[in-house]
Image (tube, rainbow, N blue to C red; front, side, top):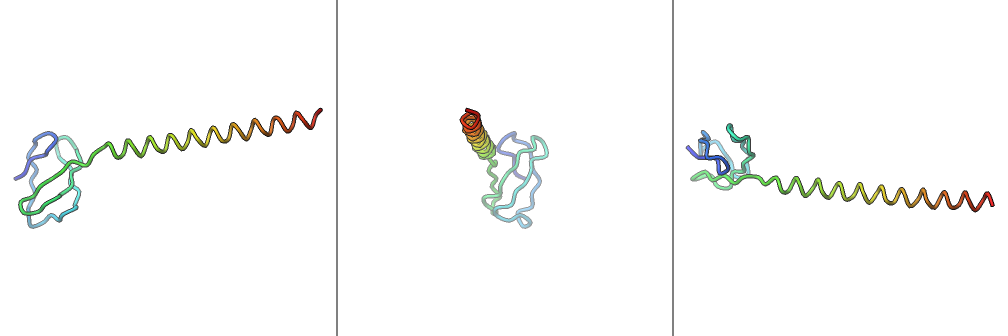
Length: 85
């Protein structure tokens, strides 16, 4: 019997049935846990920080795309104004 490193709940895992690198879920706190060792079984929580960093990178890219679109619109507006004159 092993315990969740996040909440301490008991997790019923058979050492012979898990593989290193396998992802398990805690039945109590629903944390995702990676099997880092099989004899004895050792679990490490999978960090949500990675997901948050990916989300932040996507937001930064979206903001940069919006700024590029705004600059293109401004240039088009300037071209139209010059054509009218």
